[in-house]
Image (tube, rainbow, N blue to C red; front, top):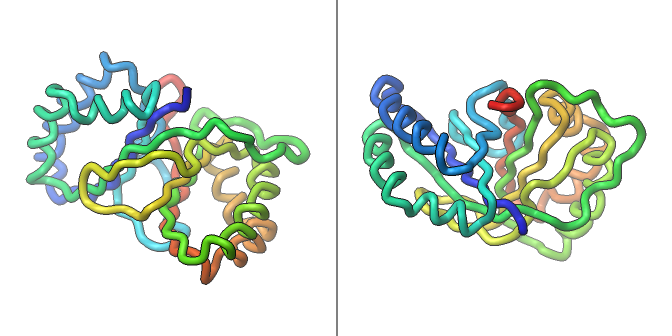
Amino acid sequence: MPKGYWIPHLDVSNPDGFQAYRSKADAWHEHNGSMLLVRGGRCEVADGEMRSRNVLRQFGSFDEALAAYRSPEYAAARPLRAPHAQCDFLIVEGFEGAQPEQIGTAPVAAARKGYWIAHVDVTDPEGYKAYQAANGAPIGQFGGRFLVRGGRQEVVEGKQRSRTAVLEFPSYEAALSCYRSPAYHAAKALRLGNAEVDLIVIEGVEAGH
């Protein structure tokens, strides 16, 4: 069964006030079976725009992720956040299809993985297919794999683009190097004019967090 993911993007206006929400939500997450993959860490906005804080949390399924958001426990935490942060929050379904083929020796895994989080509005579906076909080689070269690629999604707060992709790499450096590589830049050229994209390259939390 595909995993489910929370992807909140936040701009926090009052860090001290925000801490009450974070403490209450973290205490609840310790018991709900979810896994924190990204929060804070180094990051680079590679395309478009993103808010200043970005979180990625994994659940057992899309339905579990949606139910967790709608639960009484999280409903009690949310009002503690509202006065202190603007938030675009979506819940997405994971990907279980074919992954990019590994090319050569995979980059060495680090204590913190690296991620791409991308939100996409496709303006020319036929033209976009060429990009989708070309991006697998550089992603495979740097050890990347898709956690999210299409699938169901629900925007529960704020707004977001119509498609989401999340990729995991062995390290932040591998994720950044993939984006900056000549091979990916050649693939990226195929999506220009065919899609509008917001993409961030971001460092994950330490393993076992």
